[in-house]
Length: 358
Image (tube, rainbow, N blue to C red; front, side, top):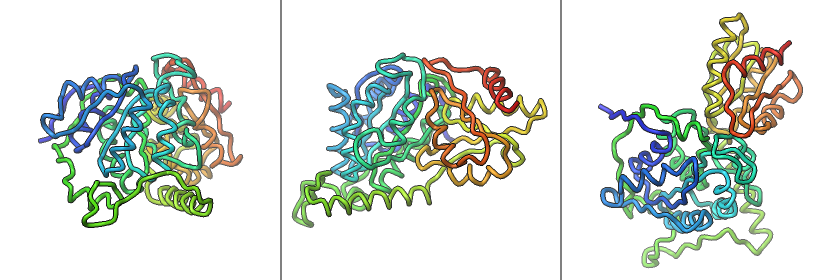
């Protein structure tokens, strides 16, 4: 029988990393995600699974340690919060350009700048649109519960290695700090050398006796070579959009109006839907789980039956731009958001929704 334990979302990330056979965690503390590293230090997985846990001297160091570990075919990860992730963006671009799989967890706080330690969703542009330089994208998973935080670690590693690309878990301070029951899986072993060869045939192992030495780099001085790399990356992103779009729907079958929300805001919006239904309004909720690839086809499918859509976010309006691109003016797309780390109540969101359809 699976074990269920009450824990914070951040703690769930740490325990999932151990249980899924992660090889290494390299990070730096920042509120509201510091419990990830704190939990790993308390659990001491280096004594049980051999997992390396290291506090780097900075966020820049930690992302480059991921580059090194991923180059060797290891399952490696880091976690941080908004300002810390900004310092990692150059390294994430390097990882994407070198086609190296890894996991980056962002427990978002309010910004810009140092901002507040309160929750936010203002990193959508940074994470979903790339964040660093160049034409690249990362797989982005948005958890809405502590259980999601746990489950998405293994899922993110699977997708990262499927596509040889960085995967992002884009959480927020609400999900990171809330405590819920989490059902944990059985301990999985770390990969053996043979399994690394099987799952990461491109990796540098330091051995040259059985195959040519691999060179891992994101540098291409020949423009034609670099164009081919970029074309390969774009084909990879298109395949993600065809095969790995994830979303949840709530009461959308007969909906005449739709809320679109992810993470903690999707939990609030579920209550808004229930209130609307009690008042005779056919409202539904679409919760994107992958922010990239985005649920374009599902929104497009629902548009003909809808009178309006409202994007609800802890930001000034970022995901709403992707919703509007899909809708393309066919119906009104409204927006409601709070800033500065203030989380709205279901009543506030409901009032804003009702006002938007009058």
